[in-house]
Each structure stands twice: as structure tokens, then as C-alpha cells.
Amino acid sequence: MDYGNMLSDSFGYTKDAVWGKWVQWILLVISTIIFPVIMGYMVRIYSGVKPAPELKGWVGLFIDGLKLLIIGLIYAIPVFIVMAIFIIPAIAITGSNGDSMLALGSMGIGLLVMIIVAIIISLVSAIGVIRFAQTGSMGQAFAFGAILEHIGKIGWGSYIIALIVLWIVGVVFSIIVSALGAIPIVGWLIAIFLYPAWTIFTARYMTLIYESAPAPA
Image 1 (tube, helix red, strand yellow):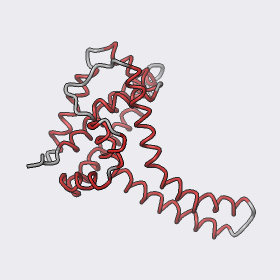
Image 2 (cartoon, one colour):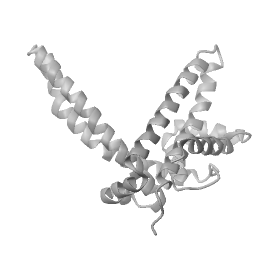
Image 3 (tube, helix red, strand yellow):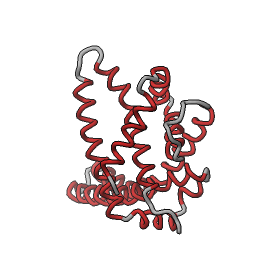
Image 4 (spheres, one colour):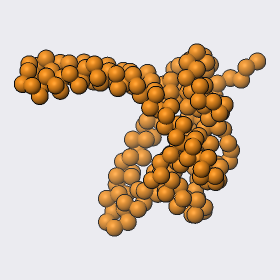
């Protein structure tokens, strides 16, 4: 997997989507407020469209965004269950003046399990949502056998490294946004305009990861 080429492609894709297209960029900023719309735009990117699609058909984008949101909420259910099992009782124990050490231990175990579960879910769901986008079927977002098979074709090591690379870029992006956001008067405006660009970049990058799997013979 050529990580450098994937980053370069994602940057060029993002630039094509917004640079010099100021009206579309402004609409993308607005769509982040009406968040299902920007999520629907991500679905279009996940579908493999190239070059970057125009921001058209807001009703369709909104519907696709809602579908993506529902898929995300379903994937989050195991995390909510862990929270209910460990953390909520710990809070209840603390609130009732119970054993604080027991509550702290329960909360610590719960947080650790939540992190592990969330990581596992994110590895699966990241591929699942792209399957949804490329097939148009929400059911394909939960076709776990096909998802795991696809990750196997990518290579678990390559897949995880690619996500780590994206995470590092995300940290750098956050630092830059924070620095720019500190500029008096215009800083917050610059930051708002950068977020849609980051959304497009990450969606394209994840699509490239998905498409890096060898095609069936």
C-alpha cells in the first residue's frame, strides 16, 4: 500500500472539490451545520466518484446522510451496552455514597473495555459504511463476513498502518486548526472553512484504502 500516494491523491481530490469553487465551499460549510447533508456528501465520495462530486441534490444527500447516521448509531450500540454495564452503575455507587474504590475500579474497567470495543467497531464500520455507499444497501454495512474478508484482502497490517497514518495527519491538522483559530477576528472563520476540506480528505483516503484490496480474479 502506497501511503504517500494515497495522501497525495486525497489532497488533490480535496483541492479539486473546493479550491476555486468558492460557492461550493461555502455550501459545504453550511452543510456541516445541516450535518446529514455533509454526511451524504461523504457517501458520494465513498461510492468512488472521481473527480470530487458537485454538491447537488440536497434532499438525496440528506437522506443518504441520515442512513449513514443510522448505521453509525447501530454500530455504537455495543459501546452503549458496555457503558450501561460498567460506568452507569459506578456513577450510581458514587452518588449513593457507596464504596468509591469499587466505583472507580468499575469505571476504569468499563473505560478500558469501551476503548477496546470502540477500536474493534471502528475497524469494521469504516469498511462497512463504504460497502453501503458502493452498493446502495444499508444491509451491506453489516455484512460482517464480507467486511472481514475485504479487510483480509487489504491486509490487516496495511489497513491498521493506513489508519494510523490518517490519525497522525489528523493530529497535525488539529494543531494547525487550533493555531489558526487563535488568530483574532478571522481565526474562527478560517477554522470553519477547513473542516469540510478535512471531511472530504478523510472520506477520499478511506475510499482509497477500501479500493486497495485486489480485485477478484
